[in-house]
Amino acid sequence: MNRINHGLLALAGALAFAHAAHAEAPMVKTQAPGYYRMMLGDFEVTALFDGAIDLKPTELLTNVKKDDVTKMLAQRFQKEPVPTSVNAFLVNTGSKLVLIDTGTGALGGPTLGGIVNNLKAAGYQPEQVDEIYITHMHFDHVGGLMSGDKLAFPNAVVRADQHDADFWLSQANLDKAPEAMKGFFKGAQASLNPYVAAGKFKSFTGNTDLVPGVKAVSTYGHTAGHTVYTVESQGQKLVLWGDLMHVPAVQFQRPEVTIQFDSDSKSAAKERKKAFAEAAKQGYLVGVAHLPFPGIGHLLREGKGYSYVPVDYAPVK
Image 1 (cartoon, rainbow, N blue to C red):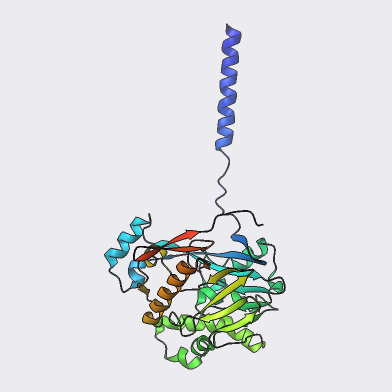
Image 2 (tube, rainbow, N blue to C red; image 1 turned 30 degrees about the vertical axis):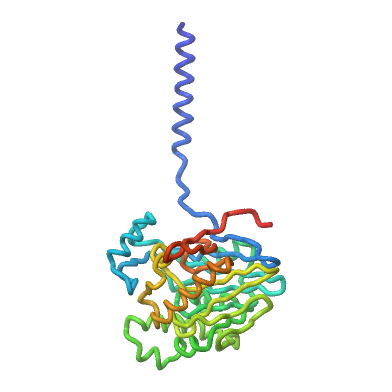
């Protein structure tokens, strides 16, 4: 009997030790590398995660009541501040490697600035990028162009609409801007001017074919030269929206809702409504800078608004 008791005690002790040892493993508290890859016809598309920034939609959204915003957030299990993704997109056409937007670089906080590291994790190097297309020159789209005082993408040509360049790269506009806006101008100029000086900035105006399969489409409103980019291959289409929207819990239901960051809120709302309707009707994919990563999916018409269907995480075929 003693042997049985001793055996049971030993077994219990061993189990307790194993459990304690397992429980003592330290928490890792890091996320997986921030990239998501898919094929679009013959093109390879890689979404890149820059990080997330906390936004307070009740303070930032316009043309809507604060109480309505709070209710719509709660319906989506959200409350303020809302973690908001910053996404960029890498398109490999087979002959060109094109990056659409670059994230915040050093212009954001500690939870941002991950584009270059995630691009490397995805199997590419910054030196391989041939062209960079900017949706608009806010800091969270152009800050990643620089790495300290060096070009983060030394072999790339940067392209953006001339209207945005004229506005954000103007010293006169910086000088007369309200104090709260001066940082936006300084960020744009610090990010773009080194490429201008190196002869690596080439603007366009309005709808423009850039490389085979990728086209710029003007959607002026959020900024003077805000541009979306259509990517098409083998009958498949993806439209990269930039900042056509910021708060999905609200703006999918209420496309008329605008945000303080809009230069021309009426035009921004008009372009958003048009883009939503077209994406839902034609059924193509959209990629969005501030949707939860990877920010790629479809839109469905739902009542007076829309619902968003994200892509499935799946093997690359």
